[in-house]
Length: 331
Image 1 (cartoon, rainbow, N blue to C red):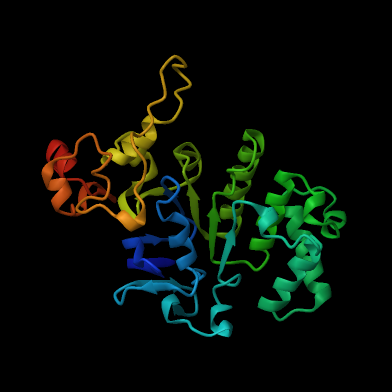
Image 2: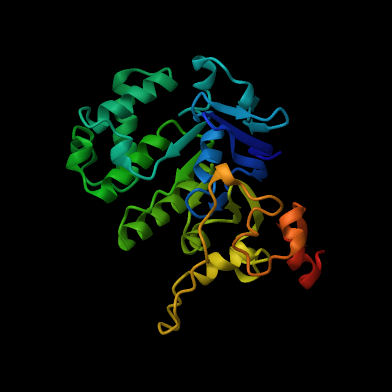
């Protein structure tokens, strides 16, 4: 049984312009000890999907009736979308599920010390004393590689460097021993050296705690280093997913190929960058048919009229593209 099972997740927002679709018919699974990379441009719906796993989207969010999010823990199965009260939501918000955000300064309260914030959330989720919470927090800060952890415990977020703040954010997220960790672009604001350190740290933590991780990013290079499998998202739709090496070596969807072609090629520095032409459409002007057809070099008339079904291109590798399915021959 998978740790996380998401089926037919469709999420819309009530706005003055009417219902706006942010996520449409998204399905994926994640096992314990596995890393899923969720990739796509800004505006693809990655963060909205991640927040749905903890019901963190605002009150104007509307979930379709057949949407299902199940978290399978050792002792029980939690139907996430059925949770209503704040007490029930504590099971997943910081308890069974933790989230690392892109910018730690936006997550830590500037007028409260790092340690006080860590202790507060531990007491909220665990039946332990303040003294025990302090001990656990300092141990976790030390475990994520923060030197002189007892001193850092009493400091404020602005007193720490960017890399140290990110490590403190990871320590805080892991201190409750979650079963699922959501990392929303945790390396984007860091320099390359610190990025590598954070990636190595997360690999170590996966081995130690055996948790499942959803790693959200727009950088397929980072995903290649961290993930076991990847899901490519565009305008709220999953257009391709599968084992990370298979998807990167043999991308089946034109959008995935576009993302890969946009990466700098270190073995040929004279090769010009190849950006994907055009811009991602507004959710208010969602294209008919395949959502990528307005920017796709392979688009045909049928792409504008019909939504392609997922086709299999190997074990666990599937994509939604009419043209590729015919060119390569779906399995």
